[in-house]
Image (cartoon, rainbow, N blue to C red; front, side, top):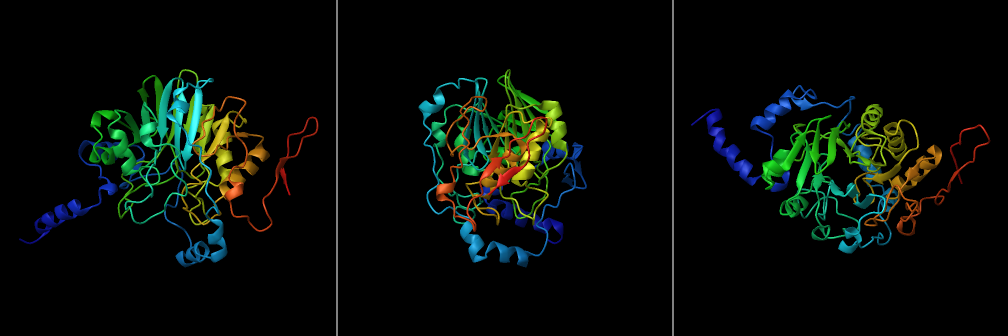
Length: 397
């Protein structure tokens, strides 16, 4: 047998050998729906603003920076990262304000909102990788076992990269009966891993779904997707707006800064709390991840330019994914918040807090275990304004 037909058995065999963590490619009606999306053109999903999805500049230059001895020493903690051992009893007591967040590290957040429980981007695995023996390894233990979280109404996934969509974690959640809200195309992975199709809410940008009294809307983001050897852009990436009867939340997923945050805020905000990506940034990929300053700008855009609500910095501290120092995202967020006069939350991983209460954690918990940069740590002090003047940028000493 010759020609294309002779390749069919080989392709079938290769699919059988493909690691389960790679997931599955969209097919059938799911693929047809993707092709009908207004955000899909030329065979791939498109960003709301143009974005380079591959590192820019010389890879030799990047490697030189990444593996430079002094810089490498700054990219990991020098001691054990503090973790709050959250218990089922901690989480069983309802939040007094009706809203509570528990940052589990990286982008994983348990949000308790108006009597419902939403789990964002849960990653409980040891490595964000398709392989158990290679890839970025977590720098601190998971604060609470997955089985000890208690019931979850909905699991929200921002996109299908390994540090946001984790096969072992999804398999651990399948038996709980929870439903999943995911961007268009990501449902193919979940079904491949055993999630029933009727428990998957798969959304394009600006589409919404209702789960137990919550409204969840997939909102635009500036990023890319892919889990196999090639990033085919056949799965969508998204940020998420969640609204309950009394409170509103925003989770950025992974994204570069773009003007669309203002539109999201006008349509779905202001938010009682935003969870904003501020880590794993680099000048080599400036379009797809935000710096802390850009993250604060996005937070203010979402709030209509007002320092309303609390910003929880996410996507940092747990995995070493970029050349910047390990503690730099936290320090940068403090500086950006001081400059803007905005409220931030800096919880130890696993420590629940209520964003609308008076007891929001703001201490730089990472400093005792962070390698000290040359010149020591900056002191972030907001200079008081005179009568009739706006507050100025922080004095750094």
